[in-house]
Every structure is written in C-alpha cells, then in structure tokens.
Amino acid sequence: DGGITQSPKYLFRKEGQNVTLSCEQNLNHDAMYWYRQDPGQGLRLIYYSQIVNDFQKGDIAEGYSVSREKKESFPLTVTSAQKNPTAFYLCASSTRSGKVYEQYFGPGTRLTVT
Amino acid sequence: SQQGEEDPQALSIQEGENATMNCSYKTSINNLQWYRQNSGRGLVHLILIRSNEREKHSGRLRVTLDTSKKSSSLLITASRAADTASYFCATDAKLTFGEGTQLTVNP
Image 1 (cartoon, rainbow over the protein chains, first blue to last red):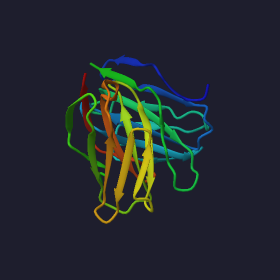
Image 2 (cartoon, rainbow over the protein chains, first blue to last red):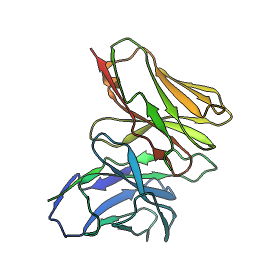
Image 3 (cartoon, one colour):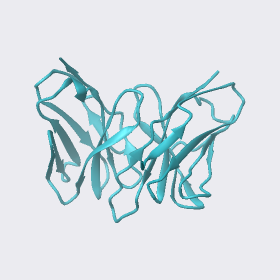
C-alpha cells in the first residue's frame, strides 16, 4: 500500500526534553511538509523540503528542526526551545509536477508536553 | 502571510440541504485546492481548480473560482451526516491553510 505514515499517534513528553516525530512516505514524492495545528485552528507551516538534503523554514520554524537525508523520510524534532509544543502535528508530501501540488497527509501525531 | 481564509467559520445544516463555504486569498495563484479534515485526522484532498478555470465538479462537489475577486466557493449538494468535517482551502505550492469551515450536517 502506498501512503504516508506518522508515528506515534500519541506522544507524551516532559517539558525540557527534545522529541522527534517520524514521517515516512512511499509515494516517491519529492516534497515533504510539516504543519502544526492547534485546537480549532488551521494549519501552520513549520518546515518544508522540496528535495533530499534541502529544506526551508515555514512560518513558525522557531524551536523546531528537521532533516531530509532520505527521500522517504522527513523527521521533525521539537526542541526544548519551542515554548508551546503541545499540538497536533501533520506531515504531508507532494509531487513536484508543474504547478500541481496536491498534498497527501499522514494521520498526525498528537504531542502533549507537561 | 496567510492565504486561504474560509468563511463562515461554522455552518450547521440538515441532511439533504446544500452547504456553501467560501475562501478568499490575497495574492495571485496558480491553483486553489480544497481539503477536508475529520476530527483528529489528517487532511484529505478533495478538488483542485486551476487559475484559468472558473468552475469544476467532482461528484457532489462544485468549486468555483473568481480570480478577479480572489475568491473561491465550495458547494456540497445533498449533504449527508458523513460530510460533517472541517473544510480548508489552500493556494500555491506551500499550501498555507486558513482556519477552515466547520460543517455539521444533522441527520
């Protein structure tokens, strides 16, 4: 089955700890994205990567870091510098065919930091 | 900058009625997309309309685009309880999302 997976579904951490969220896709997509969603809110772009070994900051990159060593994987690290890390995190991927950028989303990881 | 502002914020209708939600954006676009999100889940792509298109249909969905007004609308006809979800529009390659329209379809 082709798709995009995120793990774990729920994650609990103590304040001050870094935590890494996994995102894997087997759709052969070049581009991958990380979004944050707070309750009742829209999605805000954290980081995106259009090709392996390259990534750009989105609107709210502070306190987050990413890597793109493989086409299939785009892990997100929520560092202790992120002031309000509790949120729902969504990963997405897309092809880079012309101007069409339909995104395929993973099921999300709900992170709770106490 | 925020692209893709949906309106209304919330919409409650009866099963069988039509639901219309709107999206406004600020800069020139190449395409506009509508997505659906069930509570606590990822987003699912519904339909894409290109900047040179004015209307597009997919099943019970009808999307219009007015580039002169920088706005789009999504019409869901003959709504069902299963259509209850949040609906988002997005524009451009980075797909910045608005806050969505929460649609509730009452059986």
